[in-house]
Amino acid sequence: MDREIIRINQSEVTARIFGVGDAYVREIESAFGVDIRNRSEQSGDAIVVTGESTESVRLAARVLERLRDEAERAEEIPEQRVSYIIGMVRDGESGSLETLDDSTICLTSRGKPVKAKTVGQKKYVEAIAKNTIVLGVGPAGTGKTFLAVAMAVKALRAGDVNRIILTRPAIEAGEKLGFLPGDLQSKIDPYLRPLYDALYEMLGTENYAKMVEKGVIEVAPLAYMRGRTLDDSFIILDEAQNATPEQMKMFLTRLGFRSKAVVTGDLTQTDLPSGQKSGLAMAVKIIGGIPDIVIHHFTDRDVVRHKLVQKIIQAYERFEREQQQRPKKGERTSR
Image 1 (cartoon, one colour):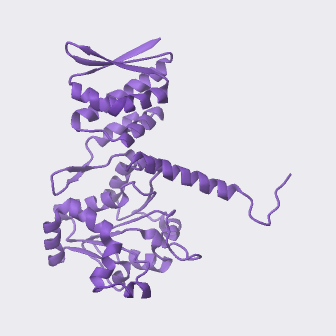
Image 2: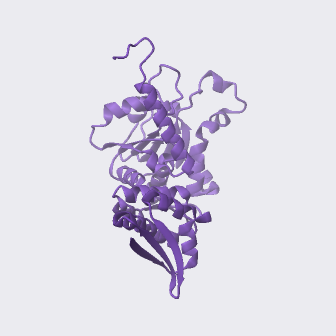
Image 3: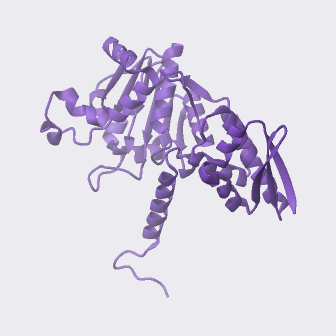
């Protein structure tokens, strides 16, 4: 029987590590086949890990040490975070977790630091910093848009760009949109709401309104980009899977001098009419090899929403793989 001990100075930190009803510790025990107990000592708490396998005990202890470090900095640890750390340690990538500690991008209007929460997110942020065009492709909840907006705000505050332009396709920007009540702005607002939310978080409502009034920030449907050349700008195209190939080409060729563009989208959630190709899917195939352009692919491991979101994504991916492997109607299977 092997054993390792992780010492904790504060009981509050121990409570965060164990989780509500010891849920986090139970997950670690299940993942590595170990037993985890807490005992009180004069100098604080001691978390004792025991098990038959030396390697399993070592890995479980590394997870607990990482959770200790994070619990000392934060008031709570999300459930999804525990699963992520377990997966990274089990895959031999625990060293990469340490690089996330100094990954603050900017501060929100409330002074809260915005950080990459996964290694995939950190690589995405680094790609944006080093390249002119980045395509962030992956499932919902991976922070594609939020991190892009954070990088745009950082660039604006640093004086690297003079304005931020955020856009996304309005699928029903034709005749259906015309039946909605109100003026043009009120009609397109529902399509742009996620972009507003990210900007409010970064800048605050009042500051955002002032910047819009001065033309420093512009939020508009993709169709409004036609015919423009955008210099000294940080441009974000969100929900790009819903852009047609023609729209995508139009957007990418709007890029002006001293500008940067980030394109985000989820190819599994295309809302285009049946038979219509996605401009994002084509762009990934066409421009991926061009210097200064990076295609960054997120995975379900990068999902930072509720733990169930990650499981839902995995379930859908399994279903789609099974559907692709089934013979089509009329096809004969070999015997």
